[in-house]
Amino acid sequence: MSISFTFNGRPLETSPGQSVGAALTSNGITAWRSTRKGGRPRGLFCGIGVCFDCLVTVDGVGNQRACLAEVGDGMVVDGVEPLEGDRG
Image 1 (cartoon, rainbow, N blue to C red):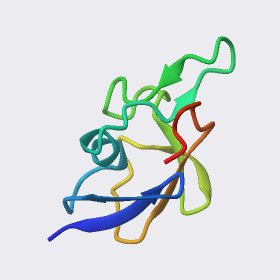
Image 2 (tube, rainbow, N blue to C red):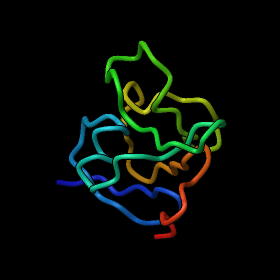
Image 3 (tube, helix red, strand yellow):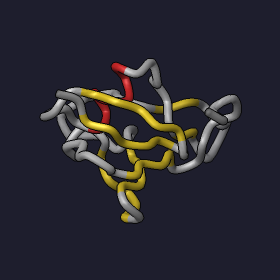
Image 4 (tube, rainbow, N blue to C red):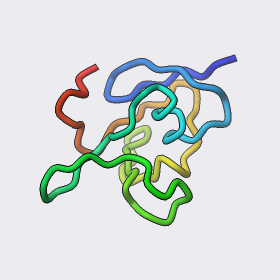
């Protein structure tokens, strides 16, 4: 069984019970926002909810930590500031 979700409009699949961060990483997406200063890519860093490097928008709710949010079927995930080259 797999779960379908979208990231920046791109359909993806993952296993049930995964965090959004794990689901993105397992689909080869390792960065989904960039820093304000310098535009450096950010994705998972600590993986346990201590830092804020993995922020995403989940179903229209911003500033969600991808490492803590469990991915759900039909979920819509967007990067805070989609990186150049992540056009799907």
